Length: 246
Image (tube, rainbow, N blue to C red; front, side, top):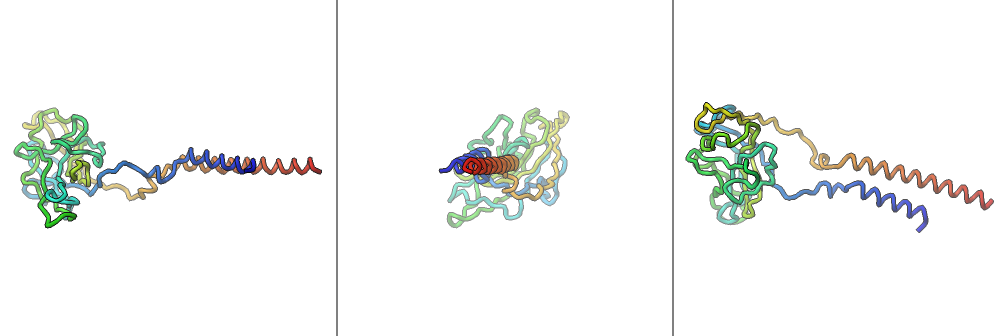
């Protein structure tokens, strides 16, 4: 291999180290699918969306029409879970081995009006395996009344519903964001709840958003600059050799 070839090979090796490949940058751990929004509605009139209420009120979560889990409980052991976690939580990576999502002490499941924790709910049985299972309305609405006062720091929280297979990882989820405010005068629960409007997310290309733009530009600049230097040195060397031979 000539000196020029060795230098050029080194340049491309250095660039490949400094510039991560798009395939590696785009890889991530398996995670659940964001299947859309859950809408906070009145416990009786589910056509009426709630914007503000307190911890004494009962409410339901309305999912998009036809919301399903990938399988049922009898054939694939899918379950329906609920969650109440800080808004910055990555909902796609929660696990549901117990009565609350795995995580820190703030992670909770929703509670029904009778005080039961809304987790591990079963789905209607299909005729056979490999069929999606429709998520039905839970037997009872939810409430914040059964949490002790001061359980949740004031701030933004995510509430919603998730499908989990046997390994307890999230398959898909639906959520809404609420603002919890301390209200000692509200008994029980001590909370006022304001639903944060879902403005949607701007359309973007997932592949574009995952590209490490700055490292790619730096790597390209390195390659171009190094090739120019090597080419110039090679040219100067040839000129010098020609002069010496003449």
